[in-house]
Every structure is written in C-alpha cells, then in structure tokens.
Image (tube, rainbow, N blue to C red):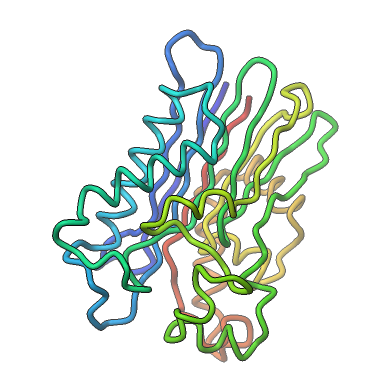
Length: 261
C-alpha cells in the first residue's frame, strides 16, 4: 500500500493544532488513519492550562494506539476510551466543564482484509474511492446546517450550539459524544483508496469551489496531498476582497492524509 501525509500550520509562527497519523500494525493485515483538527479558542481563559495542540496530540496519539491495539473494539468505543484517557490526564488541574475546554474534530478509518470502518465527528472530511473511480464523501454536516445566526455566534455562544442537542459535536472531555459521530462499515473490496482532510484543506471544495469531492480526490491522487494544500494557500492569498473567505481567518491549519489500499 501507499500513504501520504501533509500537515501545514495556518500561521507559520504559531502551533499546528491538527494531528495526523497512519499506523500499519505488524502482520500486514490492515491499518488505521487518524486525523484531528483542534478547535482554536478565543483569546480568553478557557479553563485549561494546556494548549489545544497538547490536547490534539494527546487525544490523537491515544486514538492511534487504541485503534491498533483494540482492533475488535468498535470505533465509537475507541473514541470514547481515548476521550476518557485524555480527560484523566488533566482533570485534576483544569476545568473540563468549560464549554471551550480543548477539543477537536475527529476522523478515524480502520481497514482489515475484509472491511473498512469509519468514524467522522464534526467538520473534517473522509473520502472513499471505489475500484471504478467513483468517490463517496463521509461528512458530519451538523455545523453547516445550523442557522446562519447561530454560526455567526458559534465562537461565543458555546452553551447553545457546541456539544448540545440541535447544535454540533466535537471531541472534548465527555466520552459519551462518541455515539454522536457518523459511523459505518464498507466492504474492503469496495474501497481502493481513501483520503481525510481537515477543514483547512476542504476549503478547496467548500469555500473556493475548485471542484466537487470527486475532483478533489483526483487532484490528491494525481498531484499529491501537498499540492492540494499549496493550491488552497494560493487561493487564500488571492482572495483579497474576501469574496470566498468572508470573515473567516485567511489561513487555517491544513492537513491531508491519503492511503491507497
């Protein structure tokens, strides 16, 4: 198999809050893909002495280990355990009940000789390519379905839209959020390759409309994951009138993981 992983910070002077990993267990019978996008808090106290990058690394590393070592555990159980372990690592020093306690979006994919399991929580994307070249996007679109007024205030109105019924969900300190993820299983013979993208990379489709998800996958396969991130950066710099970006930050952490099975 072939894998490619690219992760670039939105601000080269600041930390990259994304986490990306591919693990190929001994025995050659499968693998695991993990992708997290840490949620940047506003520049105020958020109840935790640790950075979002610390949280993403801790949760991502635990997800990688558990998804490999507990291959019989369903992915929601793996995520639940990983959230619990990460919370235990700082519950004595931090206020994990704060709505802005460190948190992240999650993409998990795990494949064996017979099946590909997946889990998506919040607005990162997972793409599957079938043997005939068709592409299926697995998305958790609850954030995008919120009323525009709620989206505009999401950064400050966490108590009403973040990790609440009728809002959207991220991996923070509550392990029960794992059951909120979009999950499923695809027969192994129906998946030729897959790709995972944080929302800094999905801008190629969702903000700049360079193509659909199938076009995006074709671009990654032909040009490479790094080329997709580079193209997004070009488009961001060119959008001086903010026609596509609107009030969003000009550059976001951008990560792409590609695996050809």
